[in-house]
Length: 486
Ligand code: GLY
Ligand code: MN
Ligand code: MN
Image 1 (cartoon, rainbow, N blue to C red):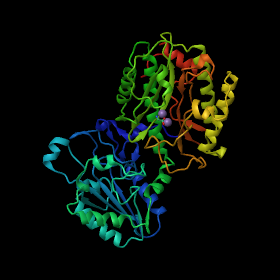
Image 2: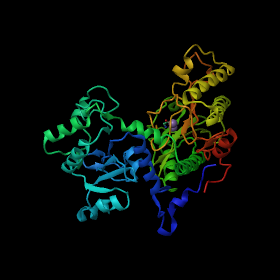
Image 3: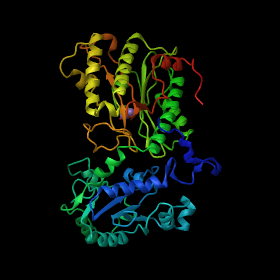
Image 4: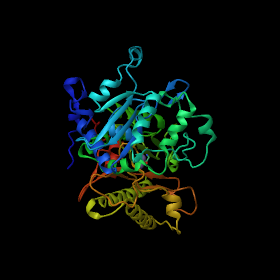
């Protein structure tokens, strides 16, 4: 079993501060060092890796959102500050590489407003850089020029179109929106001379020796360490407890947003700093919309509410979906019960296959879920023509990788054989539209069940096990017959 003593990452004697050897809660500084070493060991001799941290994002003008670090930068540094950059140079030293961090220098005046920041000293002493530089574009340009002059291979994540640096990876087309409404510029972006900037873009995008850094880091991120699994188990436990409180509270007449607020409160009071994504609290027919996030309707009677929500804890996501009856007595109707039991059986069967010994993959698990759902629905009286299930009733994939990001490590192919330490979601769903093609009693019902599962050698480990899932348990909690969670 994976270690669950996650709380050793926090030091009660320091008023809940992080334990001495842990750089971030649950993850020792030595593990960050090992991650960088593992990355550089993967790259050929003469390699340089360039990473840009995240910038502040703005809701409007100077009203900022809560900061979240860029995921790969976070994975390699544990440094939660905007406007940073890092250059790693592979070399033959004992460490195996040289690390330069670019950070905002400490400024007394600024710290009056924002509190202490990392600064150049801590970038070296705490975050392990060999050298630290101010995040000034001219310094960055100078260091990059010198470093890249000797580099044989450059690993960096370029925008899809290097001629348009604002182009995102997602869009293959030029976007007027990107052009007219660029992301907020910060210190590292502001080159005073256009030619400097253009030279830099040219230097980074020389296709002969420029490679995707993300692909390399994702290979490392796809297998979680014992420490990471312990953090993710704790994230799942917190979300599971919060889900239980939502089940206890849901009743006809309440706003979906109230249920959302309960979930978020219960996560926050257990130490989560944010939600891992905008959650779905979908009652009644809203649950037919897979990405329903308005969460602003009044919950009706004798419906089901699908809740897809998960906290982020110390940098790691959880992602749980539970479907619960809204009736005041906490009971499902017979039709709701039928569909719930179908999903539960499919969830359990697919989960039991999620082990290293099965030599299987996400795509195999998905195919299995389609076959199982088809035969289960036929047994309930559905007549399914070719493609109806995957096109209409179950139009999404069973699984995605989970980790620092909700949809983690997207470059890891779905046909990859599952290995110990990988973490994925298993989330079968059914969305039955109001259509005469389907049995009347099931029309208008949408539901999904989702667990977070760590691959073990011969057993799966359900990181979200604390969220009630058995039908009798869900009904017992919803009817108020089970006591409050601590
Ligand atoms: N909550 C989004 C997902 O399950 O992937
Ligand atoms: Mn989800
Ligand atoms: Mn998911």
